[in-house]
Image (cartoon, helix red, strand yellow):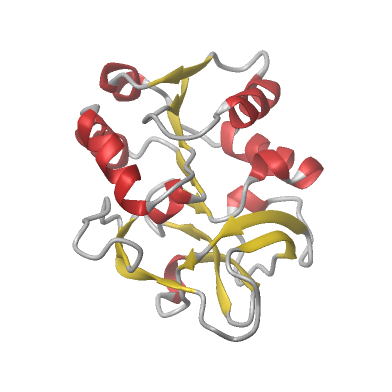
Length: 207
């Protein structure tokens, strides 16, 4: 079973339907806020919109943080999307003092005052510093859809799976070097064929 985690924020219809589409005939897809469902899922998708602090509060209130940590410890495939990726870090300047899941060290920073619009919204190109299973079959320069104001930098090159540029180069996707834990700052469910390919790659990863 693929668990799409609902922690009480945002409209999850688009990501649920996209995952159901690529998983058809492979695995059941379940939208859930249940720690038990997450605890027994073969793979987990954590979508996200809104503020960093609200995200962590929603996960904590539903008892989902221990369940997610079991997913990480068990090396089950995990994909965090947008705020779901940001939650993998230690913290964010958006809500100082609020602890993230801490899979990756570091703090997310707001895009600077460089004349570019914040949030970074719309289509932008990806570059791939190294091969990653999540992006198999995608060419450098593939465009995906972003909506975000905070970003992870490139100070930890070993976790950067894709980059993009919005006045500054930033981590568009991350991957744990030792575990199948992935984060996408962009929205695969809004990224047309490229996004469906990414989700297909995720649901076909060896569990």
